[in-house]
Length: 451
Image 1 (cartoon, helix red, strand yellow):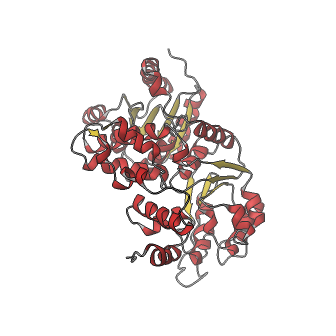
Image 2 (cartoon, helix red, strand yellow):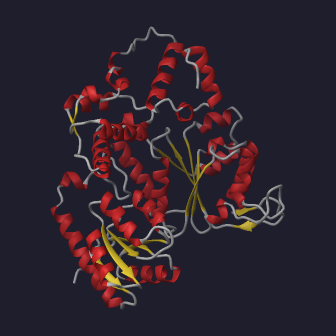
Image 3 (tube, helix red, strand yellow):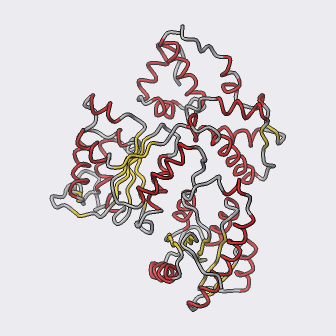
């Protein structure tokens, strides 16, 4: 019998809360680290940010089924095993589950002994694979499912571990495209709150006049159109974590309300005079310098101090050295498998161009570039001419110190626009300005007519 160790992790997926609780309690009693998800889509989100060894999934669930989850795991993860459990056992279902890639198949009801025996059989294979896996492959990912070997990313991994062990409010900073939400998910799913909801909120994407209602909820009749009482994101995240993405985009009046939530752990629904207690962990992120915004009076100093208990700064891709190569190979493998194409190889010259490019869109931009290469390239070897023209000719651009500030700004804006394929909304986010300011700069400096 294989003795389980703490590093063996299991994700249990079942739409029945009683089953989830029972399986989690029983498996944790044998020393496994257990995460739970009530449906397939949440399980997929957990798999994005958390290193999982075994997925135990029910067959029939609302929305996507256990078969869909098995297919997703087999198409996207080489090292995760799957076990199917079902209360509707048939020979056809069992054969189909094994065909899709399930290692074990259990019919409900099953005994604890049957469960432990099946899980232990799976982990015998997991442990054997770990022993034979090459060292270079083992070192590419962190325990949080994030990729990076650079010192800068090792510091991030260390900070994630410390933040996950507490319930302290955490501020995640970094340029657009660096992976702030991935870090937030890693903190949540490696914390004691991992079986409770993780609720991400893009503060910049919700109109200011609607943000309060979306965050705190509203009661029936609170305003025109409020035909029923509806809970907000804070109530949805009760017991878990709420992630306030781009919190710098909130208004000063909303910042006062957020400060009250941080201080008192209670919210006022729009139209209500009675507070409601919430048990939540707050994570926030920004791609802007909050200290600078505080000095300009655009962000409340007291809220900044409340948010800045723990700070995790994610480095830009250009400062991550050989991580660029690891990420390139990861995305190339992922997209090649999705499209059924051969895995791309990169020439030394092409890798040199990738390494020296400034990556204004960071990891998101690299992902988009590799996806485009996988789709558009006929062969399996990427040479310099296959790369986007902006990257090929960046080394030839004028870089002397005799240029004016306007010239430098104009070049940078062109590069950012090119990196996001002309998407002005995304470009404005990366530049840290609003779309109106970007349009004015395009008209005055770049002499480009905005669409």
